[in-house]
Length: 115
Length: 115
Image (cartoon, rainbow over all chains, first blue to last red; front, side, top):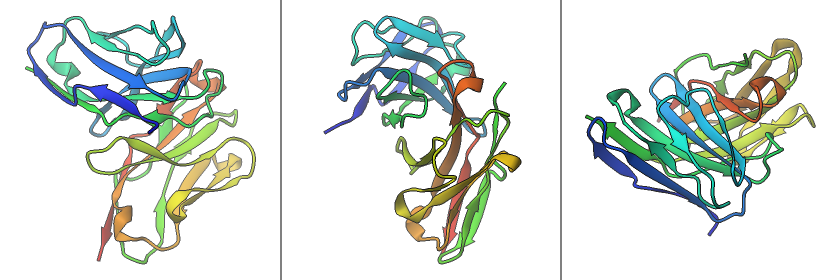
C-alpha cells in the first residue's frame, strides 16, 4: 500500500532533550516536506526536500533540522525542543520536485508535547 | 509574499444544504491551488486542485471549485451536504510566488453538518 509513515505518533518530552521524528514514504517520491499544524494557523511548512541531499527552509524553520540521505526517508530533528514547539507535525511527499502542482500525500501526524 | 485567506474558521450547514467554503489568495501570478480535507485524527487528503487547465475543477465526494483570477478566489462548493462531509478543509497555494517550492496553507475552515 502506498503510504507515508511517521513515528512516533505521540511523544511527550521535556525541554532540551533532543528528539527525532521519522518519516518514510514508499512511493519513490522526490519531494518531501514537514509541516506543523497549530489551531487557527493552519499548516505551516518547516522544511522541504526536492531530492536526496537537497533541502530548503520553509516558513518556520527555526529550531528544526532535517536531512535527506535516502530518497524514502526525511527525518525531522529537534536538537533542543522548547514548549513553543508543542504541535501536531505532518510529513508529506509528492512525485516531482519540480512540480509544485503535484498532489502531496500526508502521513498520519505526530503529536508532540514539550514540557 | 504569497498568502491564503479562508473566510470563516467555522461553517455550519444543514444536511442537504449547499456547502460554500471561501478561499482567496494574494498572488498576481496565477498559482497552483489546492483544497485538502482533514477528517478527525487523520492526515490531509487532496479534494481537488487547479493547475491552469479548466477553471472549474471537480474533485472527490461531489466537491468542486472555481478559479476566478479577477477575484483571486478559489471557493469550494458542494450542492448538497452530507453528514460525512464534517471535517476541516484547507486551501493551499504553491507556485512561483511562494519563493521556491513551498506550499502555503490557509488557516482552515471547520465544517459542521447538522441533521
